Image (cartoon, rainbow, N blue to C red; front, side, top):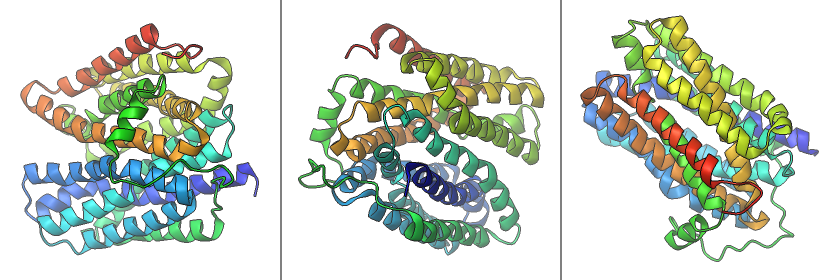
Length: 392
């Protein structure tokens, strides 16, 4: 099988799986509140626990994939994800719902493995485009998933869980028959024994020139975005008086713009600009987009601000992931990309917590301006301290 076919298959696998994720996420808080009577604080725990599990298990899954291959890890985690959605459908209290999110976060710790799969089958020159495909799959999953979820939830929240499980099982079946192994076992892995969270190895990786800087940079960018995860819809509802359909359209616009940039334009941009300049331009778009959202005034204004933000994130995510992969040894692609995903998962835990707190106590502009400020910090750090032609 040629590389183009393998890239298409991993894209389709991730997209179908993310359809299930996107289908469930928008209705999860409503289900917890209305059906189970769970408090707002407990809902926050339910949302955060998923990313916390990814923080713990992403590095371990990456290491396991370096040793045993990408394919078995991807297949097994798809089954775990499907299981979590089934448990969601049968949730009757906080603890069962929490269990479903624990298993879901465990199964969702496969993104680093998927990124390592991309790294295996692309050259360093093709890496940005390949990583962009993962981002495009995320974007499209969050465009179409919520629409399907809204339709299924009309028949009961359990049906939304069944639908999510069905998508993960479809992805599993497709990958089982179509996804080849990408790992080159002729190159020995450095793995000795997998650990749930290997602090010693993580610290050693963070101390490496360039790689540590990029991992921290990526987690700060994710934190900037995660600030608005739980507040973007509330802003639209409370302050702009948008309908659920209008809020959904805004998410769709952001997802589509991001998917277009990551799935198509990033390859052309990488030919024109070097990696450092792509990060600088991407952060500029993020700074402007995040700062403009709370001052958009109307649907068109917020949509334009969201589109600008999506251009920035669409440039940044595949570029930084590609750079992390380029600076990593072939035998450690899964391990290091797993650590990167682990830190970004931690940012997705901390971001919504600060976003919700600052929205409530500091004003509705605070989460967006905080994200813009952290994007500015990434711009300054890249401008003054990072040189792709010289190790830092």
